[in-house]
Image (cartoon, rainbow, N blue to C red):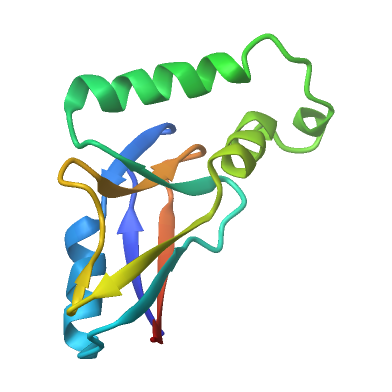
Length: 131
């Protein structure tokens, strides 16, 4: 298992972590198996999408719209209910096959940490399971 930290700059933000995850896989020496990418945070997520600025903003706009207009009860305690809901919808983990030492993903698919309650310091956990 390996971990790395990411410092986010915005309340809502997509940060490409593909190279960091690929580095962990390469350094493991594992040729075939699975890699789990996980964030141990209830207000962040992991998303697979294209790294294009307009698309990243589209994701943020759509996700914000999903939680707009609600009177969340949790906001009486901590004003971030929307962040918890979005984290649950996006999911805090993704699994990827490893084949011949490389993560199997589409040409336009990048791995993103999605921040819903920043700026914050976030941990990304990468666990490799040998096949």
